[in-house]
Image 1: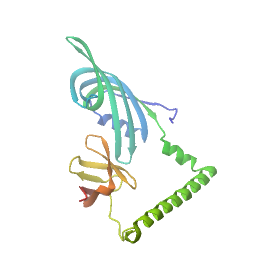
Image 2: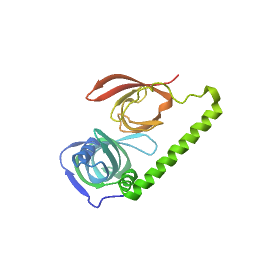
Image 3: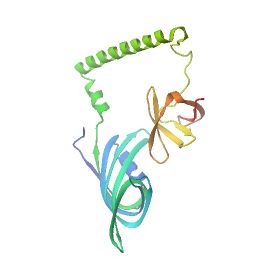
Image 4: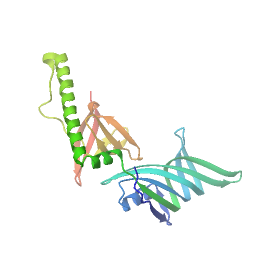
Length: 232
């Protein structure tokens, strides 16, 4: 679902991509939105459909930019796709792909606020009927979990354990996780089975909690720094 209001912004100074796009979303206090735009670029790196990085030197016409951005607290998750045109000795070269980084000299942008399914469900849950449905679903889910646990215990017999005396600590949204392969990553989402982390290049990956050990190594500004290791 979308709101009817579409916001616009012009950036006429030399600006880094995609940082300036993310900053524009934050400055407009948007939590979830689509971004569209056009303009001019000084240079840009994009990722093509084969996963290869393509560097294009300007001047470049940014024919179209489309992206989707989620913003919560200090965390911004974004993904942008671009269509570019450049004049060469052999004519006009047109390329497209996922935006990695670059420098823009002019950007004309529009922002369309969005409402996710979870938000709509949250609003609906505030109504009397919504609360009754939520209560019923909660009871059904609790009963289903109890039945599942009972069946698992019956199958395992005396060797079964319901839980450990003290569960180990795990990261929270906003914390930093040092991953041996991905580097320093920001936690953007958690559930009972998985943790979603944003890598330094902006990509988001999902890891299974059951295969990882998290060790807190430092705390700064209310955020914890963790080391992630694969369980042996």
